[in-house]
Length: 83
Image: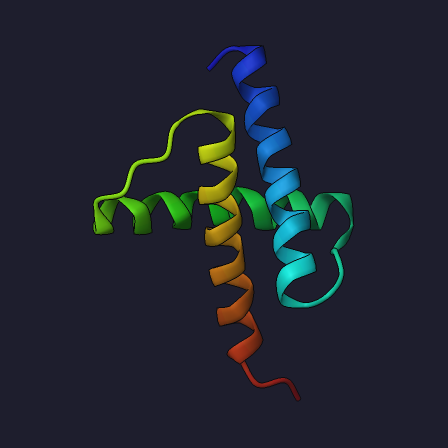
């Protein structure tokens, strides 16, 4: 992975985490939190899209995949009861 790919991946992760935070909880988690949620969401979204047989290419497709995955992650985390 070269520098441009890494920077693009981090930008998509950051945007996806922020967008998912806005959709699910109504707020973000800070720069690092959004980045982590977006990157994990990108992996989850990619796995789900592969299972369903959907492909999304380019920047916008990658962003949609990551946002949907991050939203699924935040929804599942929200189901865990808190003390």
